[in-house]
Image 1 (cartoon, rainbow, N blue to C red):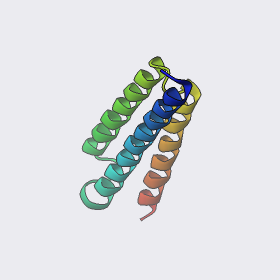
Image 2: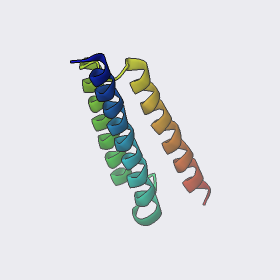
Image 3: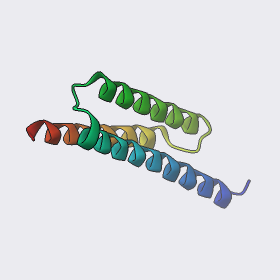
Length: 93
């Protein structure tokens, strides 16, 4: 595999992980707006399941050397911060 091809695979892998993180954020936004409040066990279960799944995807990509471990951690941390901000905003309503 050429270096150029490997770089393309790495970029694509990170794009896919970022897209999955964005889907989780949208899912939680919709759930908070339409279905349940953050105190609801269903909300917590969905959030935990989705975050666990994303962390496993990131771990897999790291093990394949498609994503740097630091980049994966930063992606998770960024999503967690966004979700916390969303949660805090919904609690003020």
